[in-house]
Image 1: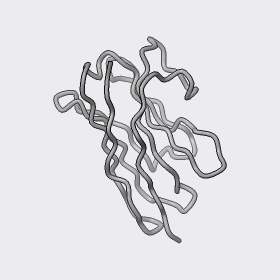
Image 2 (image 1 turned 45 degrees about the vertical axis):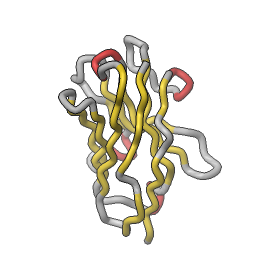
Image 3 (image 1 turned 135 degrees about the horizontal axis):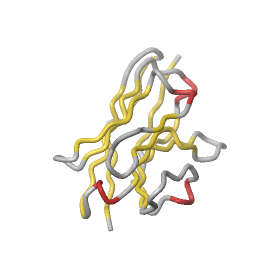
Length: 124
């Protein structure tokens, strides 16, 4: 089992940057597929980026490619999401998630552990 705690959200102006962190306790990240999701009001939770077991070949959705980067520090058991050139439409609650699946799931329902979420608000 793993416990996830996100941090780093906040209010930022359009064009600004934020780095989200997800600290894990319990089992090592290497046992899970790790991912970032977000959920805007009235919308479904969507996968933004993921790192498979082993940490190579990261996945990121087209709408944030070139602006968002997912990474992890195995020594600190911490997952990161660097977000640059933020837009008002990036406003959402951002969640860290872990899946015990061997492949990289894209559906939220396939993830087994979730953090509490951190609010990101981008003003225009």
